[in-house]
Amino acid sequence: MLKIENLHAEVDGKPILKGLSLEVAAGEVHAIMGPNGAGKSTLSYVLGGRPGYEVTGGSVTFSERDGTSIDLLALDPHERAAAGLFLGFQYPVEIPGVSNVQFLREALNAQRAARGEEPLSGGDFLKLAKEKAGLLRMDMDMLKRQVNVGFSGGEKKRAEMVQMGILAPQFAVLDETDSGLDIDALRVVGEGINTIMRAPDKGVLLITHYQRLLDVVKPDRVSILAAGRIVQTGGPELAQRLEDEGYDAVMAEAAA
Ligand code: ADP
Ligand code: MG
Image (cartoon, rainbow, N blue to C red):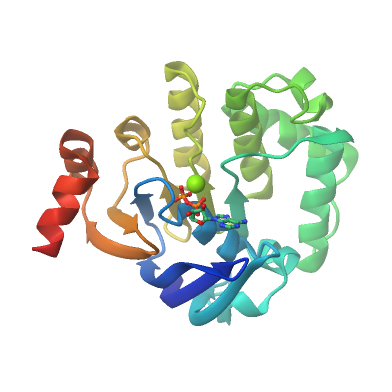
């Protein structure tokens, strides 16, 4: 449902993605691992359409809810979101002055409007928010606070997963959603990802450094991103080998 072909992208004139190809089928969780500075966050920003990340070659095709294929790169960020793409940031931003509840309701209703659906009423929205917050063991009081302001690293990540639950995307790109989580929060977030995104018509690109998240969200495929390209793809055992042997050993073998 997401097909990336020979993608090249640069930031400030510096090439970062250098011919990256990757395919995620519907129903799949595809984990991306790779050394620091490899271009993992850049890939997620390029998919989301963040300004300043310039695509200089290649294509990204995305299958919409109704099955039609669209050129993702031709869309503005809000159109990508309305088409069903969700981006979970490595570093979630704080939005002072805006409560989570306001923010999430606006975001959901904007997406519903783009799909030609009626806005959700305040009551219905709160019911939905309560259900999704409960899934992530997040208290409603936290959702009434300003977006991410004063949240711990782990709370920001959980708030993002509540957002994902409410928006119910077709495809999620999750950038190091496990960073900053303690063991218990990691399990809650991992199970949240499974509940929200494990479905035959959905897909996930899960960027992570750690096997411990993959123990909960069991990936169907694992790819290594290094120096702006996918250098190896395998099954879940590849993640375990990386954990045991490190990138250098596994990549040296791939190059041999
Ligand atoms: P990863 O998420 O895999 O650790 P990133 O995608 O964040 O890697 O970064 C890839 C490379 O792009 C790094 O060398 C980083 O320094 C560089 N980079 C990222 N953003 C910018 C920027 N705004 N200006 C210049 N270089 C950048
Ligand atoms: Mg990163």
